[in-house]
Image 1 (tube, rainbow, N blue to C red):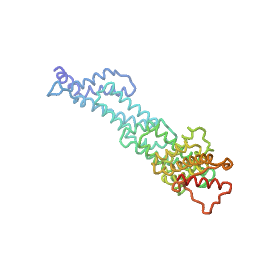
Image 2: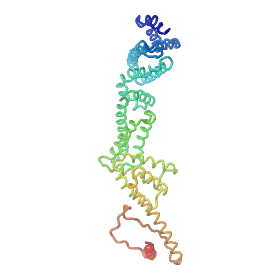
Image 3: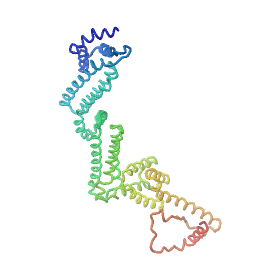
Image 4: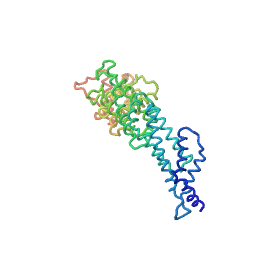
Length: 421
């Protein structure tokens, strides 16, 4: 009853005179926004009184926010819009976008803190939405235009701020994603063009390692930007992937060829997996193979890579120049994970043939040691039995004549193999 009397005889009387009470509070809030110190406790008590006066005429025990919304929240939101519209336009007229990003970030935090300190929580959504509209949406065009400048000069903190602000409004990030994709694509094409021009190289003469390193450097730099500045957001990840796919498959080194990039990547992998590679530790080799797989993901014609890789693997295995069986198996496992069992079936069978051939040779030597004199076994002998469907080898057209010195051993093995199979 006391609140009803207070509302009718005092509050409405004062408030109806040009919203005198609400305007007094709004002036204090504006003073605080201008950097002055105000009595926050007093403001909170007045704001709370607006809530307390929200009485339901049909049920005195039931509270409503009608008074609070009509006499305080609505004027407050309108005053907020007017204040920040003027401030943001004035600030941008005299300062850079980078400085404005800091200012907008600070103002948004201040307003969220304001709700915590002396507003009712129901005001949060409306207040924050209005601030986002005035501080971000109305100046989004200027932010989008300055985005390329921030990328070009690696302004990481500013990129983080711009991302965080524009992520708060619908479609705020899409223009950034498109600009970022184009930025990455240009960087990749420029890196390869620089590589081909450095030695006046024709596309066919590009060194595989230099080519792969150039592509990886562009990817790594922009991957870091995505993770650090854009929080690994899926849209930016997709932009990076599309850009990398473009410049990995078609650039100054490939020309119009669709097979050049997978060929160079397969040659680089071959160099890594050979005994004379320049990679120090096993962990370094594993890391280098993982980097090969980063680019492999972007190769469009993976069958071309498979053809070159299979040929190189067969030569490493036949000539015994693999860095290690573990490294070879690791690479095949990576390819299997990326493309499935069928893609690596031939590679796996080649390994199986080598393993079976080694066991076959060892068993043959044991057998011969039991049944023949040492004089008959003075030939160093090993054999590879390779499946024609799995190895990229073509039998020679001319007849191979076996030297007399190894003919007896060859014939013994032929009989031994015939008995085993």
